[in-house]
Structures are given as C-alpha cells and as structure tokens.
Amino acid sequence: MAKDKQEGGEQPEIDLGRLGDFIGFRLRRIQNHLSRNFAARNADLNLRSGLFSSLAIIAANPGISQNLLSREVGLDKSATVQIVDDLEGRGWAERRRSSTDRRFYELVITEGGRQALAQLFANLEETERDVTSDLSDEERTLLLGLLDRIYQSRFRG
Amino acid sequence: MAKDKQEGGEQPEIDLGRLGDFIGFRLRRIQNHLSRNFAARNADLNLRSGLFSSLAIIAANPGISQNLLSREVGLDKSATVQIVDDLEGRGWAERRRSSTDRRFYELVITEGGRQALAQLFANLEETERDVTSDLSDEERTLLLGLLDRIYQSRFRG
DNA sequence: ATAGATAGTTGTGATCATCAACTATCTATG
DNA sequence: CATAGATAGTTGATGATCACAACTATCTAT
Image (cartoon, rainbow over all chains, first blue to last red; front, top):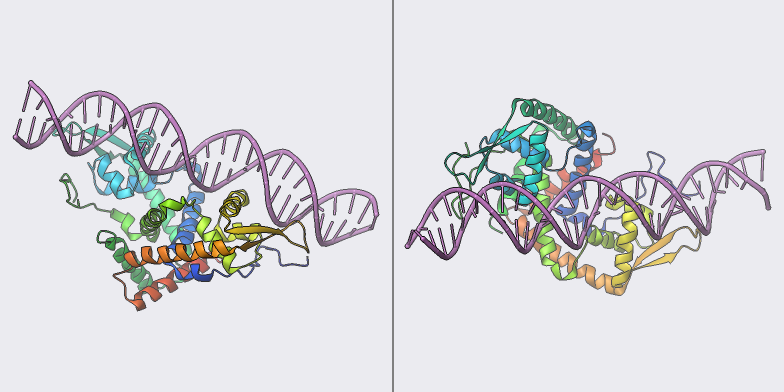
C-alpha cells in the first residue's frame, strides 16, 4: 500500500500536456463515456452503434432512403444495410419500395419501433442528465449552439 | 419535412427530430468528422486510434506505466500493449523496467517521438482550426470549459 | 436503344474492443 | 521466511464494426 491505488475514489494526477488544449480529445473522452453509459442502460437490447440514431432519424423523416440515412448518420451505405436489417428484424422499421422510383426504399418506423424509441429516448435523457447535471439550462443551450456551429462549419472547411 | 430527392450538390433537409436535442449525438458527429480529418492529414503514418494520444500522454508524463496510460486513454490494458509495441516499433517511445518495482514499465518518449509528436500536434491544430474557425477565442475557451465540467462530472454521476 | 448514374446488396479484409488465461513480480500476514 | 493474494504486463481468441470494391436493378438522358 505504498502507492496510491485506485481505491474507488483516488485518481492519480495525470498531465494531459498539450492534449488538454484540444477540443477533439475532450469530445472523444466524453463521447466514450456517454456511449458506455447509454449502452449499459440498454444492455438487454444489445444495440449496435448507429442503430438508435438511425431509428430516430427514420422516425423524424418517414420515407427517407437508406442512402440519405447513411449520409446523415455518417456511415457507409453498406453498414446501413446491416442496420436496417437489424431494425426490420426487431420489428422496429420497415422497407417499402418507392412507387415512383423502384431503386429506392422508403424507410418507415413501426408502432413497435415507436415504443422502443420512446424508451430509448428516456434512457438517453437519463444518461445526459447524469453528465450535464453541473450545467445550468443556459449553459446547456450554449453548449448545444456551439456544437451546432462547429458541425455546420464542416461544410465550408 | 424531408421528402425530396437529393439532386447532385443539394443538401437535403433532414430533420433530426428529438435527436437534435441531445449533446451526445452532436458530439459523435463532430468527433467523427474531426477524427477522419485528422486521419486524412496523417494518412502516410497509418496511425491507429489511440496511438497519438498515448504518445502525447507519455510525453507529458515521463515514466508513466502502461496501466495508468490505459486508464487515461480509456483502453483495455491489452490494447495498450499493442499501442506501446507500435510506438516502440516506430522508435517513438521506449519501455524501461522500473528499478523499484520490476513489474512496471516506465514509458518514455524518444527524441524521434518528440519530433513526430510536434508534427502531429501541428496537424491536429490545423484540423481543429478548420472546424472551429467560426468560433471566437472566447467561445472556444468557453467550449473547452463546458466540456471539462462535463467530463469531470463523470466521477460523481 | 444504349450509356451512365444511382440505390441497394454482398463479400472481403482490416481494425478494434473485450475477455480470459497466463507469467512475473510485489505486498501482507502469520 | 513462507505463502496467499494482488498487481503489471502479455498473449490469444472472439466478435463487432467498418470501409471498400464488385455486383444487381432500376432510372435518366440522349
């Protein structure tokens, strides 16, 4: 017991060096923590990454194509195939051939999907509440705005 | 909301729905974009994820153990073995057996590693500059502070 | 009618995280 | 000191994930 172990509470002092000055590094750590927390809350569902956000986007954009969905979630279209397969397998979403252009599928959420999504959103709210509990509403709104501007700038970079 | 096809260069209007209200989702997209941008800038080095931040932490904490490094980067200790192997293979870092406790390695950066790290930091700065170009210095500082408080709260959640 | 573009699918290979088992060393306790 | 348990690091197996390229089917343009 000569040195400071991590006895549940102790944290050794680690210097991040220049790394601490970068936004990307902090984003990564937080995002890591958030996704683990969220995954733990939904361990029974065995969600693959991207499944939840895909379902949410389908819900908000009924009839969206897989191609658009891919772009929005940031995955390759082949990965989206797997995700939509998964969503269909769970009975949470359906593929419907477009009547106007038979190359497309129109993705729609099912009633079961809607229920699942409500539960997932509730869990996500808990996760985020845990993590942003120190922030006031104003600060949280501010943060969302800043993140939004960063994301938007991607189109001009 | 969103229904029309995407013709060529058009940005289709996608509704994020409730997803847009969550910090985690925005973090993920930005982080995704950042890491791809950074990876593209360093394509010649073929960096595995976690290698850069590991090197930076070794540089800022000379003599750190692999175990501590694992915890700080958020990787399993077995993954850290691979990364340190990689760093040694590139001649960027070295393992030195601790003289006081022979179970430990003391990780140190080499001169070559220092040079590589300088270049990597320069590239990371460019990447971040691209993405945060719309933010004022004050806003950037504000963002860093908010992210920091979120990350710290992880210990109390 | 044909060429080229687009949506979706499949297969492949690389990467990666996670887990369990193993070694070697150290610490604690009698 | 002897021994049991903890810790640092390694190895190997497994499964998930993802990007990429090749393929099909449909559509559009000419």
